[in-house]
Image 1: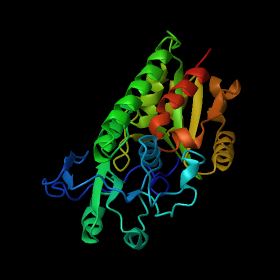
Image 2 (image 1 turned 180 degrees about the vertical axis):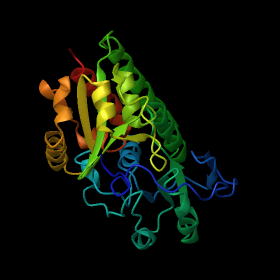
Image 3 (image 1 turned 60 degrees about the horizontal axis):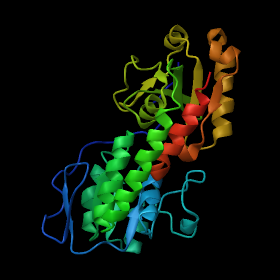
Image 4 (image 1 turned 90 degrees about the vertical axis):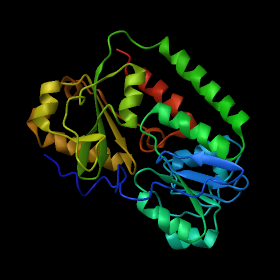
Length: 304
């Protein structure tokens, strides 16, 4: 139905690269998500982050960044509005990063594996993490707490997150609604699988992922091709649309896609208007410490 190759550079990337990391001699020694040992003589003060969620966590821990990605529709702290933009995990501006002289760059595993020797070649360290589940985000908070020597604050954030998620369990519905979570970029739409962060958030909120059995894409293993026949057969109760960019443009494109294919009109979610565009700051990126807020919203949208 739709070609995926051109659209979702924000979802995944190349996975070749370094695994050994930096030497393991230093005051602070981390093992990142790529199983690399990275050491620091002291907590880094000049931090560049390639992801929005990582920026959120750094500030929640009481730290700051000297370089950041584009804001994702309001996720980032107001304090970073004047911080230089250094691209993203997919479009790393090495020249800009070099000019900032960071002690550490926070990148994505596996997307930024190939950037490890380039970052280290300019005299900076790089720490790789990922966020494909709530557990991953918890591990990021713990790891960055150690990196910044703010471990007590990290424990406080984790305890708060556990309390927030725990309170949501009491409002989950026994009969989980059947949901299709669609990741959209202009002209391309993919279904989020349970292994994706969105899929994990949906499961935590008590929803049933209708794409669970869809075959994953080789290049984007947490997503599946949005096949009309498969979707009609699944007949989801609710359709939720996520996007990293212009949500209105993506929604309009998705509506046109449905209007151009009469099979979509057989879906109860379409006939009864149960199509929701999710906020980009919570679902178009890693929401960082706001992950419980994302689950809460899903819980509300799943109410019968």
